[in-house]
Image (cartoon, rainbow, N blue to C red; front, side, top):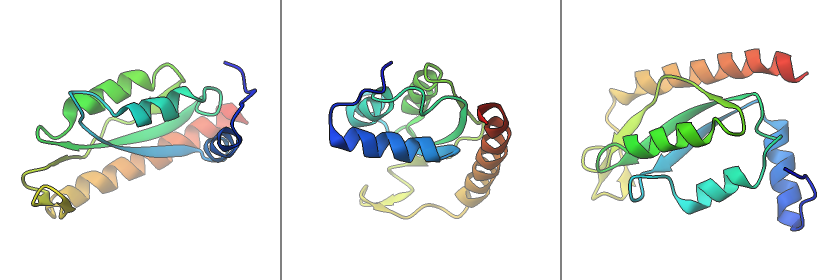
Length: 130
């Protein structure tokens, strides 16, 4: 868990994650899991993630629920606290031709609730990081 990053891009990534109090991860479901790029982005850092809040938004043919659960478990390692409310979108009903995002209006309430939870948790967790 060293912060001796070799690539210059890693310093930028580390700095960006460090300066944020919370996150919203948006993940597709890929083979019942998150994508390798997202996993690498999380795994490359450690202390930068510690004691921060996060929300998860998923999408896929089965709403991306398995990927979201996979991500929730992965985020426990770097001590990211994920909120309960989880918007999930269907490729069939929330995307036009399975490619253009056109979410149904009923998702707005869930998204707003998740964002409120992320702000609350991130604000509370900041007190233990300072």
